[in-house]
Image (tube, rainbow, N blue to C red; front, side, top):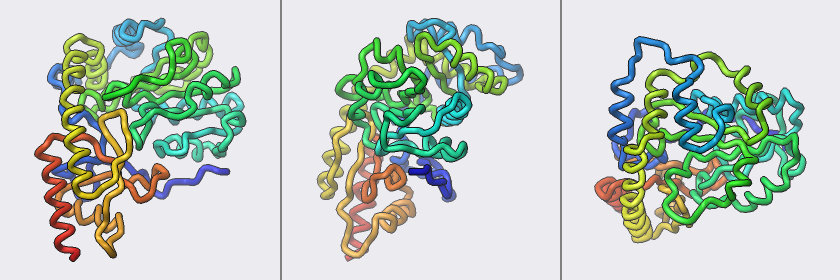
Length: 340
């Protein structure tokens, strides 16, 4: 099966109508922004280049994850790294890519850009993507341990850990030794509530120095600017991590309330371990999901249609504060009334 080109990049957040006043469509930490990280970004010196080797930042990230500095790779964003590692996989002979049944569109987009077909058989792929907690479901990825343990030596197994810092329940599927055998992709801007700051990093598997060096060769100079560097440095600090831990408890409380509110509207909510979940709205008769979402958007509320993830008929909702939840409830009630 070949990867299909996307007619447009589908993402949450601001759109042609501007910034949604009540935005459930991105998975940013609704308790944010993290004060210490925001202050670091605001105080960053944008008049100078960062150190081209990111010496101090690499050291901080390596110490934070307790890995060798040589395993830490900076990236302009998760999406940039997705395209870069796909390029490397193709250069090293990859003939197919495997994707989770539901996944972020840039995995397939990068494969299509290189003419790399998508296969449904993990054993046939030389580039395999995983994400946990998964998107759009926010759940464990089934078969992840088997995927890692059965990988071939030449295969790239990349675990997207964008939502690991925002895990609200359960535990990661992979053991530490299994994580040592995967590429790990981290994007702390979501956890810090600073998604407008584009910066990410990856941790190479142990013993993959040659592949890590090859990825560095494919990277342009200064992938991360001064603001991104400041955010990542703050991310590794005690204050930011304490703030994040406290925010998770708030998010758990908000999540329970938000699920209850959605269920009171007749929506069916799917299980989730993260700060977001999927739901199937109870649509008024004669109204499509797309029409309902457009009507909500006109009222300043944006939800993420999960059709592009491979889950039609559902929406993904980031956990939001009670006042924003109430705005969704009231807007949906108005939609029901006007449709009768």
